[in-house]
Length: 381
Image (cartoon, one colour):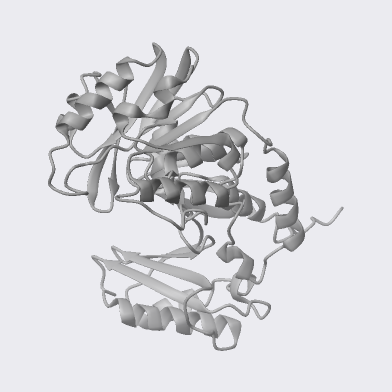
């Protein structure tokens, strides 16, 4: 009888939770499905899935709508501190925080409706359990690996954040404009527009250029995480050969240039300058036609855009950039859209649906999310 082969660390099954901004869960499920063999399950705040270390690497690299990829290491009941320490010590921490990892560790705790309600005391016991398992002290600090302990209704869930910096921080947007739309939300807006990635796209309120840059990188198939590092690189089980293969395969799918234009403009000279430098860092400057002009004189209005495409934009919300009445701006936007070819899709972010209605475009809400404490509707027509 042949002995059963033991699985390598790269082959072991892992329980994953991929988090995202509220409202983006259905979009994230579709995006995650395209990069995994197993089917993810939508849940509040993200999706759950079963995968391998290779999936951890690939999801961090390829997902554009996610906040973080977490590995769920254990779940158990705990009502007393000695019990918590004992059960934490049963977790195979050496696979992630073993001697080959010299990175500092941060422990983040949330407690809700549980007998163990003091987050600081819980963090101390989690640290004690990890050190008992490893047989040595762990270096505490920022910038390395983060252990997350969540206790709700006396059930403790232990996870490891494999991403580090939130995944929306791609690394290219160092210059910002007024009220910028975060990279993951900009990408979500492009997705809900149903732009086909093969026809022109325009943004007349480009700000720091986030929407047009995300659109260009999507069409070029540039992995969202290709210009940054991840927390999993500090783990003791980091497989450099596996990561190199995943990264190389991903980059091989990227195309060198786009055969169609992506147009962006903004009336603010500072925003225009920021968008240019951000596009250069994102390696898509040659794909973008950027200008500094008000909406009524947006450069794309004098260009043959063909019969199909998309206008995707994040107009001023009003209360974010001052108290000026922006309703006339939305009315002008409606007239600009009506002057586009009939085959153009429209998607915009709006904090006030009354402003969206002022466009006269018959926009409907595709999803509702949260951005900096502001409820934002992504509306399409």
